[in-house]
Image (cartoon, rainbow, N blue to C red; front, side, top):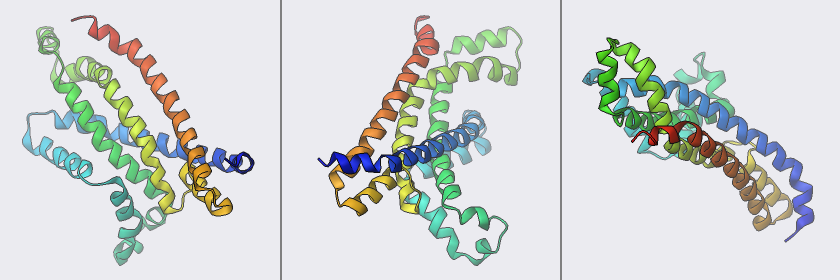
Length: 229
């Protein structure tokens, strides 16, 4: 183990850590904001509203995220209409395409997680809301959404960790994330074991923090729900 090379490369990894966290937070924020209304539509008994959402989640979950990233960053550039459109400054940006690909991917998975949580809601909670004269929208806002968000926490925690690992794909579109830092260290020192092991330690440390945060959230919001049964 060449610890001196690792030490000399630490500033590179610290910068890569910042890039990775920025990508993760931006993707989760954008994907989560879109997933909640889509999950609500997915749960409605109206085919022309729910089926398009199902198709979106089916296609995105059925294709690799790397392919989706390549389609956005490299694929769209071949169309002259795209290159001449007002959106081209965004679509030519590796940052934008990476965040968009990650956000779309996590949106699809989060939509299905929330949809499952909504469907798993005890019928008694809905019946009680109806008995109190709540409309469908009020029931969704006061009963369904808060309860579904709590029940979705364990599965969503896994999705966040998977998305963290997925951000490692950003290096293939020239972004200097943690994996990109490992590649640069390897190209400088020709030490692949030390380079990628260091990146793995950083990813593991972030994962430990994320898992701890979600476990604390589950104890705070999910455990009381389980105690009702």
